[in-house]
Each structure stands twice: as C-alpha cells, then as structure tokens.
Length: 390
Image 1: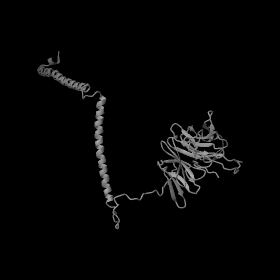
Image 2: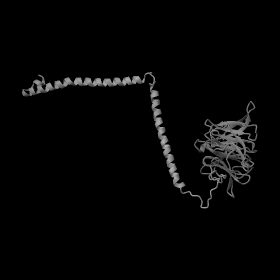
Image 3: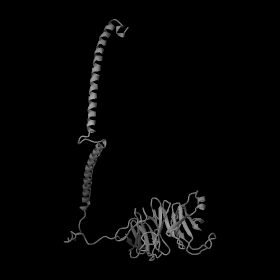
Image 4: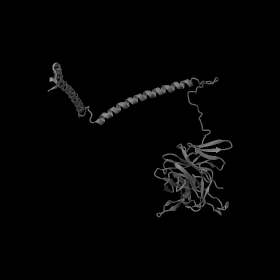
C-alpha cells in the first residue's frame, strides 16, 4: 500500500500534507519556466549586441582588434595625462627645493652691479686636472714620452702628465668632433706621437701629437664595437688595430702616413672573444695578437692576385695544456728580446726578436719559433699584465 494509506488518524494528516505538496509541485514548473524565459531573453539581448558590434554599419567595429586598439588608446591617453601631472609635480618640487638654498646665496658686501651684468661673462671654464685611470678592462695603456712625461687615458680624454709639477694636458679629439670613450692606446717609436682607439659602435682611431695636441690622422670605417688594442711597427710607418666585432675580431694594418690611403692595407678575422694585446716583432715585423685562450702570429704577404693579405698562424699550447688540463691559457701581453743575452743556463745565446708573452695563470712563455713554446716560467701567482725587456 502507498505510505499515505498506512495508519488511521495519521493517514488523514498525511493526506492533508500530500495536498499541500501537490499545490507546491504544480507551481514550481511555472516558476522555472519564467526564470528560463528571462535567462533566454538576456542571452538573446547579449547576442544582438554582439551582432550589432560586428556589423559593417558606419561607426561600428570591424573586428575585435579595433575594439582593443581603442581601449589601448584610451588607457594611453589616461597615462599621458597622469605623466603630465607627475612631471609638473616634479618640477614644482624641484623649484621649491632650489628656493631653499638659492635664498641663502648672497652677493658680496662690496658688490657693485655692472651695466653689463645681464649678459653672460666673457670668462670660460677650462679643464685643469683629471683624476683616475682606466685599467680594469685594458692593458698596455701607460707610456713614458720622449719628454719624460706620462701619457695615458681616462674617460674620453687623452692625458699627458708632467710628473714633477703634476700638471696635465688634455686631448679631447679633432676640432670637428669630440673623442668618445677611449679604450686603447699605442706609443709611436719616436715617443712623441700616440694613437688612441675609441669604444663605440663605429669607433675611430685618432693619432695625435703629444706636444701640440694636434690631430695627425683620423682612421675609421673598418671596425665595430670598439678598438681593443693598438700597436705601431718598429719604424712607426704602420699601425695595427684590433676591433670588437660580433662575428669575429678583426685585425687590420694601416699605412697611416699615406694620405692617399684611407683604408687598411690588409685585415684578418680571428676567432676569439677578445684581442687583448698587439705587438710588432722588431726583427721581422711579424704581428703578435694576444687574446682569450689564444695567440696568433700574423705576417703580411701577397695573394695569388698580388693583393696584400694578413696571413696568420696560431700558437700551439701543447706543453702548456699538460699543466692546464687541456685548456689553453689567455695571453695578456707580449714583448720581445732586444739584444743577445745569456742570463741563465736554460736560455743561451738568445737573439733579438724572441717573443715573450704573459698569461692569466701567472706564467711567462718564451716562443722559440712563431708557433712553438720553448720555455715556460712560473713568474707570478696570478695574471701577468705587462712585460718590459731592456
């Protein structure tokens, strides 16, 4: 039997409750249908808005991209307005801060205004002394001149210092342009001329006189990124330069005294992260290029077509690799023996022009031939940044 029929008096009560449930049940479908109609009507209205937005009527959006662009333009306009307010607020704050100290600046007690005080004075400020020296990322950039002065560079200036009086002369570039940040320097064999290389996207090599500070030559148009190293030949007629190009480090040789020749005699690209030092062998003008995990010996030769080329021969680190676990050391500087000598039992009857290089592990290398190591001397605990022979 159904549950409503069970029990006497309880059954009657149950019958009344069932009647109320039937009435509620009959009303619930109508309420749900009304809610569904409202939801459908809202959804239809939204669809109509989307359709109207995507129509091709005049003034409507052709795509979601145009709608997004308009939103970005509005946001940008709001930001620009905020930037204007911020800029004005910063200017007001700076003006107020300046008033705090300018009100304390008073003219001298005996000051008498001049009729010409509204014009700027005829006096000008000149550079007197430059402090500092660039040595953290470059080598071989301090030299004694023929006049016993010291030539070096800092920032975008070439500096000539007279040690006893501590007075300086400053070279800032040719008259038509200011010299950019300097990264390398080379001394001419005469001791009265230097060459400086810039650190810039399109660097220039400026050759100038140490006494008059006059620009003698401006070389450019070959290197990119900067000039990491420079070197003059023994007779001073040729200048070697090393660039900092992205694809490879280019070494170029210039006949800088030839006014008709504005491009290098020859160039060669070397595979190394950086060329740190350049040096001409005084015996045969073989150019030594020292760099990161490499050393190259370059010689000017002739191609089959009769053009000058820069032939290069890499140095072999076979002996050194045994002590450095297969890693070639980085060469930081180079020098050459000047006369015959016999200082130790290991080196006897050495001739002029033997190449000596200093490494980043404290060793000095003697190169018997252009590509072979003859001897390794453990000289320092860390890097050997400079070698001088005399």
